[in-house]
Length: 245
Image 1 (cartoon, rainbow, N blue to C red):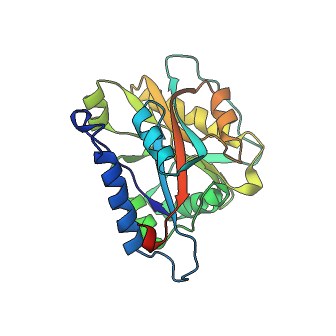
Image 2: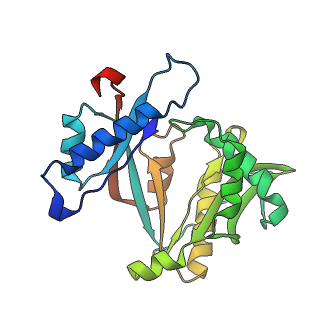
Image 3: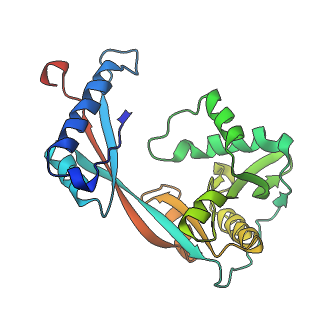
């Protein structure tokens, strides 16, 4: 899958710039074979915000089909946050630096059930360690014995908040491993994460979700009063044969 994303300044739109950039992206995709098998399908993918009407038109004209939808959601932290019990046998412990590998491995396992999952390579763990906004004191990690059952790795991006003149935290990296699902664990961890962000002076919490997530994540977030603020469409098409580019 070759993922591409494009932007055209408003002053240069409707002059063919977007079409030319898209064709250039196709040529770059053709030049980079990601799979070893010659017969492996070559897929072009992109995504468009609901308000990007020109982008939607361009994608459809170029033979792309909408295949998936996702939402950005926000929750007002000034509204009451429910106190929810953890499942029996589960406890939340302070996240420590030495736990990071176990937490990441548990998250990697949980995300196997997400759409378009591909195995996370080792370098993904290094990116996890280097993410500048993680704050272990905001994390809520559920344990049963020595097993990580689930986690919510909330964070705050101060520069983003300053730019947009807001106090927003993010409840992201929400994951529950298969043996602990359907027991209310995700809701309990998210509610604790919301309280932690509120205690840091945040006014709202945000997250992103696949609208068709097989784990029922969207329903969980709606039950905790997250509301949709942005909608995205994921588009795909096959890469044309080299002779057709």
